[in-house]
Figure 1 (tube, helix red, strand yellow):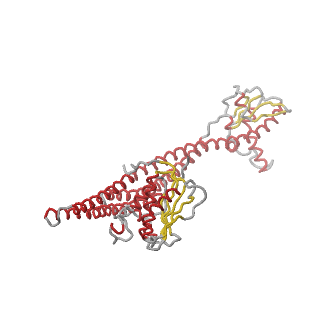
Figure 2 (tube, rainbow, N blue to C red):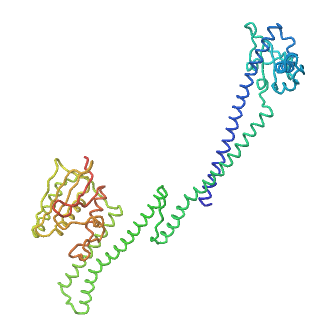
Figure 3 (cartoon, rainbow, N blue to C red):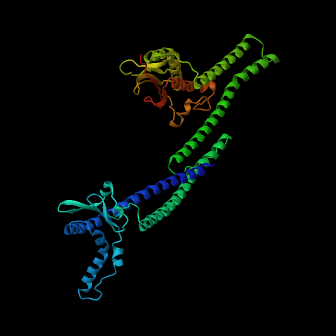
Amino acid sequence: MKLKFRLSLLFLVVVAIGAATTLVLVRRSTETMFRSFVFAGDSEKARAYADILSAFRLERGSWEGVQAFLDEMPALLSKEIATRIRGESGWGSSGFAPSTLRSLMADRVVLADSDGMIVADTAKALVGTVHPSAHLDHGIPIMASFQRTGTVLVGSMIDSSLTGGDVRFLDSVMRSLVWSTAASTAIALLVGILFAARITRPLGALSVAARRVASGDLSSPVPVVGRDELAELSASFNEMTTELKRLDAAKKQVIADSAHELRTPVTLIQGIVEGMIDGVFPLDEKGLESVHEETLRLSRLIDTLRELEIIESGELELTIEGVDLDEAIGKALVLFAPAAKAKTIELGQGSAGPGRAVASGDYFRLGEVVYNLVSNAIKYTPEGGRVLLARGEGPAGFVEFRVEDSGPGIGPDERERIFERFYRIDRSRSSGTGGRGLGLAIASEIVKAHGGSIAIEDSDLGGASFVVRLPRFVS
């Protein structure tokens, strides 16, 4: 089943459960509140009867004749009302028909004496029976001469069952609730279906795009609609396909560059060997040395590629120890002094912060990073320029060193790509004049393997500044 229909079904189930629960609770609370309302009204009526019956008890001294008094009360009230309206000498002094008053006094009235025996019942059903005290507690006491002489109960105080009219009222309320709940359920279901379609539409587009990516098509981005999590997912998917395209292009470029770099020595070796075989070149020591030189060059390139592969795959084994950056910089200054002197470049050490800067890392591998950066700086700094090595405090828990030069610098748009393998700023340079473009890639991967970072900034000398941050060594 598709997600859209599953979500719609889920909305339907949730709304149905919520609606059923609401109906049960509202029905129960409505009935409870209605019973309380009816009981409150009956209580007021019972107090009125209690006042009348209290006067009856004081006058008669007992409850004898109270049943007849209750039965005659509608007629007595009818006569009194008629007298009030028509006067003593008015026509029809018999008053209104008692049935007219009985419709106004339709509530059942029960009177119990002080012992709980029913002495009067307008329904004549309980006379002579004894009512339990727990039930009588709901009634209104009748007081005469400051003594409780009986208890009167009216309507719902006698029987908690609702009348037919009450039941019909509750049923009408329930029907209204059912229809309103059904309408709310239909609206909620419609909104749920629209919401499910809104959610699943971008997911469907993502699914189609994912299948295209799986088949190798990276050219069709997913439309980004809105600003919610689905829009963020679509944007992330587009970023992923963009990165995949970049990586695919980089892979093809690496293959092409590798083939180009390997072709040169192989072509030279092939040409020399074929020339020796054909007798064009003499088979002597000088020719063999040329072949040997090209094989060494080819071997170094293969070893460099293999080293980069090992580092990127996480298989590089590091011997972690404390590496004093001042010591590493001092050795680099001594090692590259002849090369700097040959180009009349001033090679020196910049200002350092207080104390020692000891990095946590592999001494041999970090030395490789330092030497690579210094070698590049000297290579691209024009004659009479300056190259400075400095170390200092990095962010919390890190130390850093810098290699700055007064060369042409590196533009912001090329500072990320400079660490890609085979990438050269000047594409016209050959591997013989501009390097193979692998040194910085290896340096970057070595630094990352140590948990550090390498970045390029503008140097105060006018060129580039390579900043390497490494974790501080904790003994």
